[in-house]
Image 1: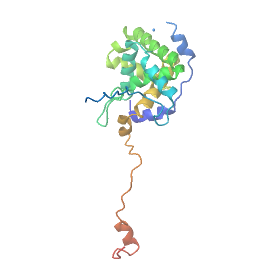
Image 2 (image 1 turned 120 degrees about the horizontal axis):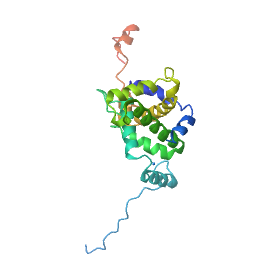
Image 3 (image 1 turned 180 degrees about the vertical axis):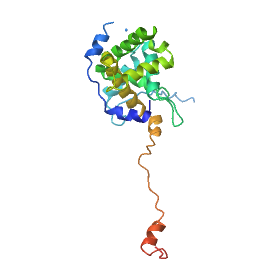
Image 4 (image 1 turned 180 degrees about the horizontal axis):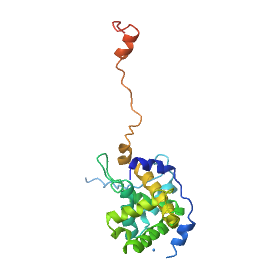
Length: 212
């Protein structure tokens, strides 16, 4: 899957979580100076103490189990694989980003877990194994069925809904990291260096021999 296409996925939203909800039904002698431990405080630019405390709490929690995280990692790297420009989604720690996001925005929890369950059930029915245990060819064959909404068959709509969300989260996570920013060549604001009027412009106005 072309990572540049993933940028378009940032505009994608989940169609509905109803189908995935169904899928979820199937876990000196001087007095020694006392230095206080360094802590994150609300003096951090633009952050309130409650925000810092909340982030620390969320990071300490675990939502996805090992199997689910392994599946998310495989999917993320299928969506944004490593190439000669930059690393893969997992190199940019996108799976960890997704784990944090579902805790930060709880409405992602059920659709993501339900989608992962759907993927395993579908893969098991088709190949007799879970998605992460399937071969790369088998994995891609399933992704090809759910990655293109307009071409997908009705019976895989739950997978389409899940993959739309997965793709959106992967692209959001990747393109907000250093690896992702470099991947699209974004340089940000940079000071200009004035080297004078370009020679061709001076020549155009007959000023090439004029000292400025």
